[in-house]
Image 1: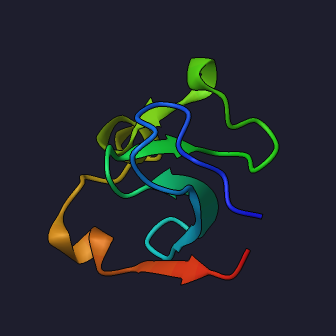
Image 2: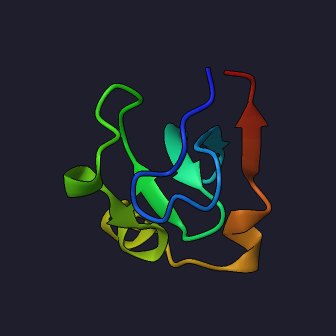
Length: 73
């Protein structure tokens, strides 16, 4: 089931595997809001993608973004 981004409302949330950190997250490609858990995707719990990656010990870069893999929902 598709769910609009609670932050921007401009795109759908997508389940994305971030290979560089071995984590699966929910991501809005439009505003780069990210949620670490599929079941808690409300406005109050999002992080900016760059903040999320930094907290995981990864410097945001094209090399990291190239490891993103969209998963079927």
